[in-house]
Length: 71
Image (cartoon, rainbow, N blue to C red):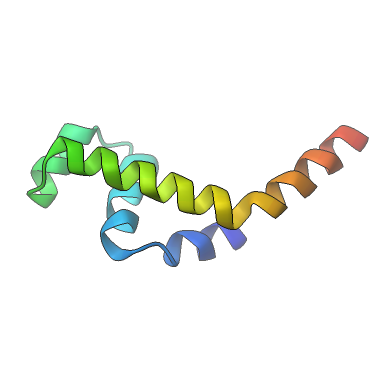
């Protein structure tokens, strides 16, 4: 639920590129062609999206890691 919320809060173009890449399994070139942007712009948006998601979900990832280590 928190992951979906974090993805929905991404800037529009970042979110669009992230979804096409990670959920639709499209290659950077395919995404660039579909959206009419360069491959470098796709890479930029992916890098930015991952950075934002990492920051927003950091606390949950730490808690999950600790939980899994205790099992």
